[in-house]
Length: 283
Image 1 (cartoon, helix red, strand yellow):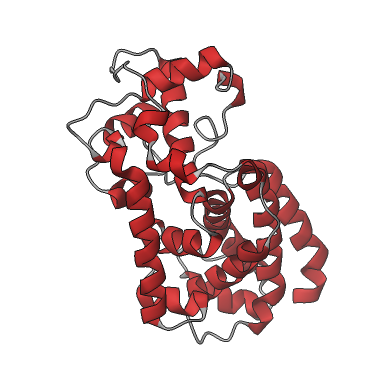
Image 2: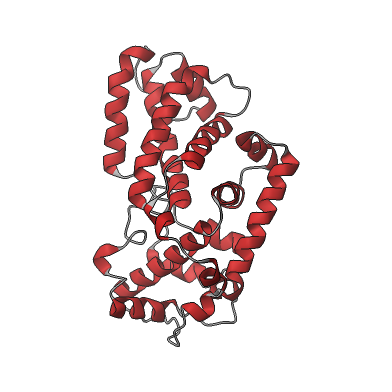
């Protein structure tokens, strides 16, 4: 069959894969795996849990592809499968640990440090500063219940439309907009003391990172987010990301700046192995 058409739309790839084109299926999975992993990571808050659940989601998408009728876009169909899975998956380790609502709403007091951010901080500390910021953003998401968290991630981070969100949640557009609005209001409440949306306030994340190292809960070798492999489309350096964050002015800008991550190599290998096992069934 030759090589898959790398310029083909995701809709065309889905239809070709549905008809048994294994090369199109491979190209399709390659295009969506990072998005599925990214959604799982934002929903579950821990890379390993995200990897496990994203693998199951991709397998569900592959096995359900024959039933894709094209009544909605492939992306909407894909997100609906992923969302249904993530809403019912077991609690992640980050969810079990929890993050008290009052802590999120009073970050400015809970994460107090008088040390302002300074560009001259050494590279290792800059990495730890990024980790602090990413953990803080993730913790805010975990304060939302799963349905509100999903609505916020899809609506604000992935920027699905109200119509698409309604199809994913199987509700009316008005109901989806209401849920998204409620989630926005709650996150805005969490962020009222966050320097990322208060340009006039000095960032204290460098001080928090140093305090975390001293207390032992933040270690260069035990980072969850800052040192993970970024998606191919993510070309910003860690330093430019931090500099950009210092210029954020809205809640939406902050969450959309959350880096995109590539699905881990182990995850990709497992999915490829699964595709080989079912290849005879999709020809």
